[in-house]
Length: 232
Image 1 (cartoon, rainbow, N blue to C red):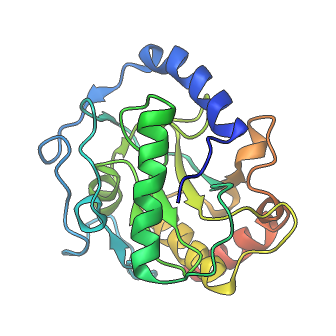
Image 2: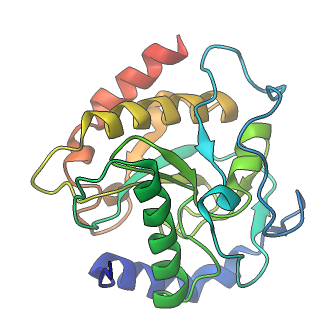
């Protein structure tokens, strides 16, 4: 299904393309650029053992295109998480196959429509609660907990914040429970891996003039409390 480029994506892309060169992070030094790390593996030494790693499908699993140029890594931990919604129509197909197709659609939009080198967000959460890696290398960095891949999801925050896209548009309706539950688990695991306080979970509209992430923004206090409870 063809989805038109949203106003948010166009504006965000125009600004990001003009500022990307100023960040100048270290080139990606994990697996070969574009190579997908495993979805599971040994527990990173940074893990505190309180939050189990959720299942996250890597780029190879959902059939991602290779980046158009090497992704870059920032040699420090992120200090926050930023929650987004995709502003795509709210599908009633909650299957894993649809989650993978949605990840491909987002990547195509970001690469072909916005001119970015890869998906802009680090991770994607489907309406069925399935998690996928967005930008190549993001899962490898998350599992090791010491670096982050530079994203393209929020101007001024791309070298500081992990971006999680939640499929759908939530200006007038709440997300499915499966998406919410998955978002809580993902944020808790990410906070654990990177030492991010639960209080440092934000919405896109905290940093830009946008409706994103819709009603999810109103629920950020609830999300922070749920994440803090999981962290113990």
